[in-house]
Image (tube, rainbow, N blue to C red):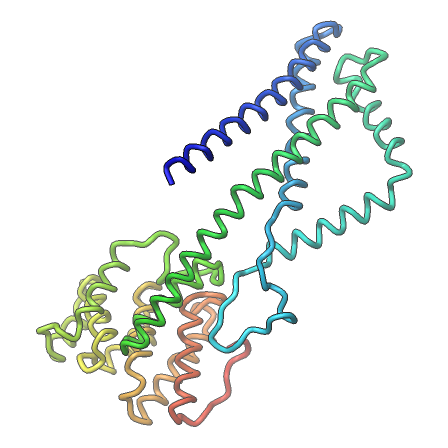
Length: 350
């Protein structure tokens, strides 16, 4: 393993040296050319800007061509089953569309490509000194750094983005696997929380109240309290007192205890948190707590919970679209239907 890492590091250093050499040769040629210009400093500055801009354009095109495809992303080839999750391929689809567009435009305009290159050279030649040979040099400069930028962008995307996506998918897969294990052990709320975290890693949510990009101390503490809730010496009255506290930490502790052991929870307190959230993070965990209490609620309680969740989904300042809270809320509504609650009309998009 260490030997392989050493070889990888050596290969990357060689690649960096090769790229640096090519960039250096390009700028060396620019420097040598501009020394004979009437105003060498301004010509050099213009040449550097042209080179950098062309490199950025080439790198962007290389990025579009280099975006890796997700295996099995074709829904027609492998239709998703209930409960399965796939990677977000929006970037891949945009890349495919733009790549085809660029290729189509390039092929249709192939005959006028040289004419366009000459016009570009004429436009850039005054900035490079305006000499008679400035036009072909400008075309050569643009082509050199365009190709260099394309290769650099393509290689960087293939080598770095693919690895980053693979690591992210691996983390999400680990979370899904852990969620299944917790589900088998009877920890439905913990499993639900892990699924939400996994989908957050896959970019499914634009608003992540309970699943921040980086794990927070509060989220880790919630998971720890939830895991030990069934062995907690606290009773329902103590948990009810925690719910009524003005201390956010104590309120979160009450929610975590309720998530881990619904017998400790107070429905009225959880419902209050669902109806009148004090923060997005508390709201997310209140929804999780409500999710864990569903099997022990009476019909009237289930109806009140449904109304509270639907109102939050419909409210302009309620649960945002494409958020982890919305996903949990929809799961609550689905669970209410599954355990016999008479279905009520869903809001649009729920």
